[in-house]
Image (cartoon, rainbow, N blue to C red; front, side, top):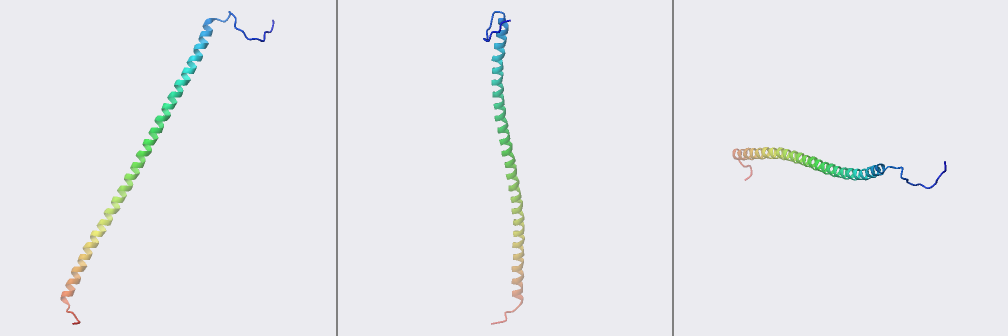
Length: 106
């Protein structure tokens, strides 16, 4: 057997094998390209979804803070209303007392 260091293709290799290998290479590259585009699309979808969820959670948190502020303001308003009633009662009591007691200096 003689060793030939040069690679060569002789007529013993069927053309069907060459075509099959060529098609496998072509479709392998095509599949990889499609896979890459699908991965990119999924990545964009996940980013949009996470941004939407973050925005939704942030909005819910802001709504919760507003609700707490409204509740606090309602409590403050109730206390102010009670204080106004108490001040009015004090004014009435002072006026009544001033009418009942004669002035000392005069």
